[in-house]
Length: 122
Image 1 (cartoon, rainbow, N blue to C red):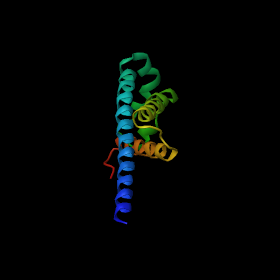
Image 2: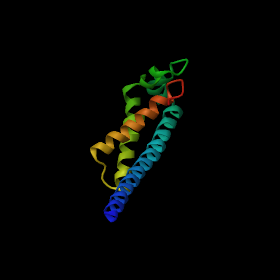
Image 3: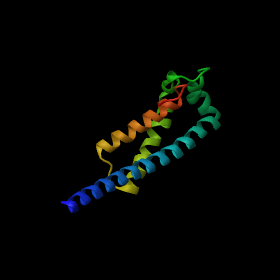
Image 4: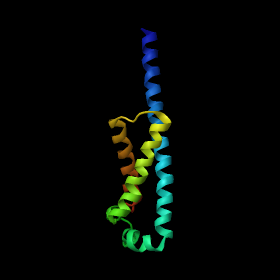
């Protein structure tokens, strides 16, 4: 019985470690791709004026700021980094289940909403 408990605990720890490795790879790649894309949107005058400037129209940051995007900007700053993050997590750690994908998206949504809320998120 003790061996069975140890095996189960070991399996749970391996699953948790695998999940955490997926999350770390996903977040690091998402942040790198987001940073590069955001830098491009600011440095390219045409892209800033025609695509990204709309996001900076708010005088103070609040929840609306996080949803005030041009459609192309929304793709470049949300979908594009997520696609790369999921691809990297799959390459580095193996398949990503639908549940894991949902958790990855939820953690990212929580972070992105919190960074534009204008106050601390618990």
